[in-house]
Length: 123
Picture 1: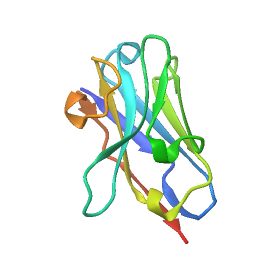
Picture 2: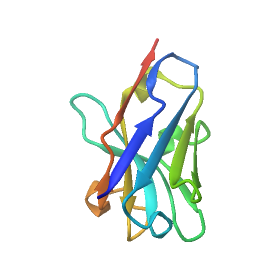
Picture 3: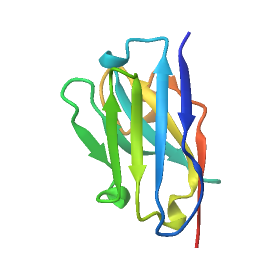
């Protein structure tokens, strides 16, 4: 059974930092790209960042480049998203997801999803 444990979300002031973690089990972690998506109230789910399974290549949505850093520890089946210089517009539920085909901007390409963790940035 596939299972994700997402953690690290919370309430932070603008300019602050958070580190999200996504620990996965139930599938061959090394074979999957892992992405982070977010969804704010009334908005569509959008891709934030992704890290490939093959060579560790990373991808970032334009608004988070230079502020967010994704990394993975295959020995721990865990992916991290370090977020600094947070802005109120970063407020959303953040989800990690796994894709066998590799990194993609489209949620439909992801095979497994976590339950999400809330990030709230106050101004």
